[in-house]
Length: 263
Image 1 (cartoon, rainbow, N blue to C red):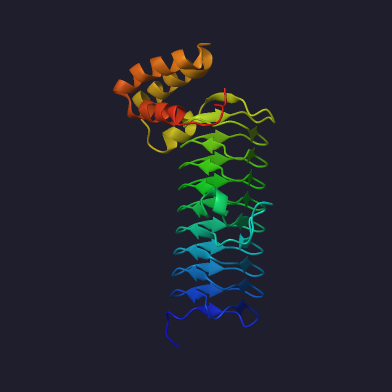
Image 2: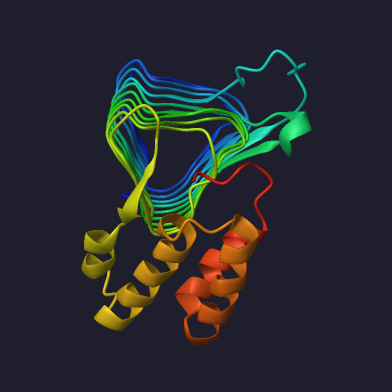
């Protein structure tokens, strides 16, 4: 037996068409269905189910009892071919569910790299999640939600379908967001999901210097504190964006929103 051969528990059930990379580990009583690809070094714990079409990258860890690649929970789904694509080095804890996409929603649920999904997280059909995010216990994304990079969602937080959450946002415990959350924004720990400043502590930890954080704070005050109509706030943000790439990204997010902005 080669040192690179997958290590599979004898009670696991793996479809012959599934493709497992080198050094993949599969735990007891786990089911891996047809049209599943799992990259090198990934560890699948006990009592997991992975249904295809699903592609999983390298060095991921599925701790146990995760349900991955299941059919979307959407009444419009009619059995069409859709898929789930997961990147590299993600940590997926107990009882996490990640569903495939729908034909009407683009056909793909996509998860990036280096994310932590803690117990009972649910990522619904057609969601797109970026890189380096942390979803705490019981985080729930409805269908078609887009989450940027470096986003933290606290326990029992959730997002309404079709919402977008921008890079470096922080969603407080129990907050339910029903509008687009701009980059860098903190959302309060209440069911109303109101903006409560910028995620300055998170930005410091990621190497943002005082000048960058000051520019983001100024943009936040323009958007949320000054009491300006949105059109006028965007005009002022356009002026600020001339000297700040961060504000430019914030403005581009606002300009591209199709749902109401969280305000």
